[in-house]
Image (cartoon, rainbow, N blue to C red; front, side):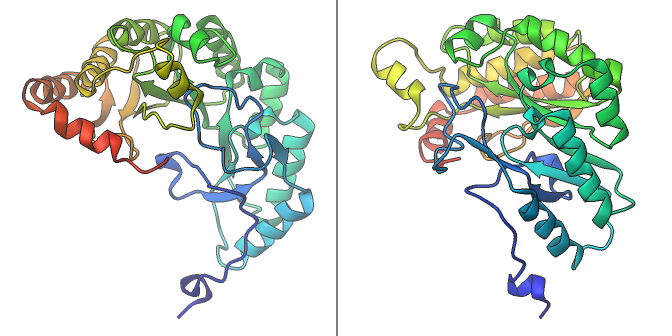
Length: 304
């Protein structure tokens, strides 16, 4: 039995480690932990950490790269973990890339999570320089293009910010992916939110749009808003209608998927090629699926 199979690889991972589904084959290296914002009303992802945000000591990053290189001799892509490592300064991101180069001289790209606000403090020239160091395929938890929902959920930016900052990435030739959160606009506003989001996304060039479904946990601020009567959750059928509406209104070429445990219903395809097929599949589900079955899955979904 190899050392990997024995589980003796020692890495400096803090709390629960999150990655996009499409980063399954990337080498995960922790460079930050927690979220610089940590104020979205629905989010409970980093509540197991005793701090809001911190950068990993460079000694730990180097130790992890050295440990990984014992087992993985050639790695084309590295994914830096943490809610938004892209918040780090350009100099710090360059330093991290240089460390990767020491252990993986032939690496091709570095990805990570980011917030739209992480791009705002970087110029196009800064971003072009980061692209030269391999930064590409940055994933943003956009969640929605619905300004009302963005404000209520305290995302910390508006739809115009999404457009402005992503156009900077386009100019710098840094590709990016979006997370969409089905259900974030609330009951009665799902289709509105989907259409507003499509208007924003259609002006941009996300390589992948990965949709998750909102799952509300009692430890979230959003749960308290619901108890106070300030917000109402969409039914599971409403969420499927919202998802269908989003796909119907997207006109850009992109990969669309509902990966991840929050989605009982899985749809995947390339837009616009597979749009008709995906919409038809969702229409059939909406007309036949039992709300109780979907709801049972939602309420029994373990903490994400």
